Image 1: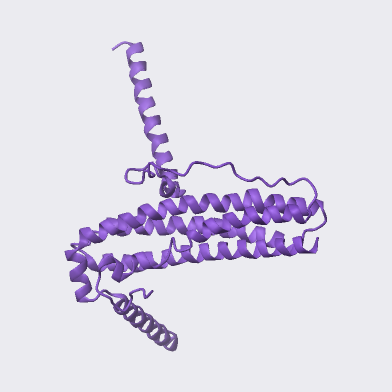
Image 2: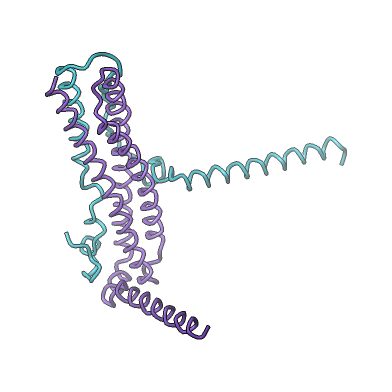
Length: 113
Length: 169
């Protein structure tokens, strides 16, 4: 094998090693950072087809005076955020993982709702 | 030296008995093990559905918490400072909210890892381990729930103070 051919093989092998190394590091970071648990493009986690259309959001400027009208408008918009969050108040309630919900006979450790 | 050894042995025995009692208290009963083993696939399917909705809710809540912090609390506090109206409670609440938001994200990651590990357990063959992991996952979920409650309370308190400022103007 001539020198050029050998160099080509070395280049190919090095490229593969670097690709494997960087991919491994990326996957480790992806797992350890917790991003994997927010990734809805994972198989089985694809969002529903009818997604909420992004609405134009209210922006409160950090400049200007503060009077009762400004505060009233601010509070009204802020309340919308609170109302949205309130709807998801039971998002992490203990009920879905309780013995009864999972169909396991109720034991001492069951979660009573 | 003998006394020291004796105390050491007593302490070791006491801690062993404590942990064995704890294990006994948390172990799944025979009937629970039977059901887990028999309906393993159904239970796992339920857990996968829970996992799907948990991620969905995490994304929705996370984006709203971010909006509340960056588009409401921060600009209001900056503007209030410029108008010499900022009570110290508002800056404290903003700081608390940011910290709690970070805790929520970390606790959710921990919970998600536990749920994924729970789903990976072969509950047909090893219902005991499955049930143990289920108990741990419940605890982790409880923390996430507590975080969301804390965040909601901070938002409500913040709004009340802002309403108070508006009434004084």
